[in-house]
Length: 201
Image 1 (cartoon, rainbow, N blue to C red):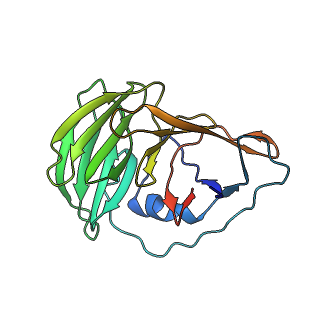
Image 2: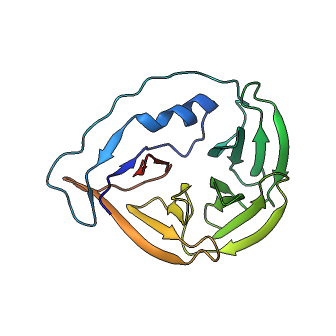
């Protein structure tokens, strides 16, 4: 398949507001080569903030996802990690489910009506029912978990390196891996991922 891989870089300090997470997608860097070092410098993109929404400034946001009009948010830090649903217009928390203290929550996405949440170094992916946040499963995987998105069939995960993994949502087994490069070499510290219009950002 002919497609471009694009990445948006996000620091590990969490977002101060929903606007930063929702509107960062159009911004930074178009990665022009997968699997081998590129010969051209990546094209740079600008961005424009379209709208800002109220948000809990104390939330250590590690994952954001809008599904059927509901904002899902994954929080990080040991002892503070959680998965929650939020009213986008008001910022009010609708439901909140805390993770056990030993887990550091990371990226989230929705696939086939299920909500998936990575953990940083605990090598565990939690699976929830979207409507209730009821935990349905806890699946192991290898390595660190950072950003998460989906192509509608597989989970797509970053791990803080230059490698992106395509995973089976049934058991987190690796279907394939992509290495991200520019003309300067590996693009490390890949984190937040979004699939928009068939392009991986």
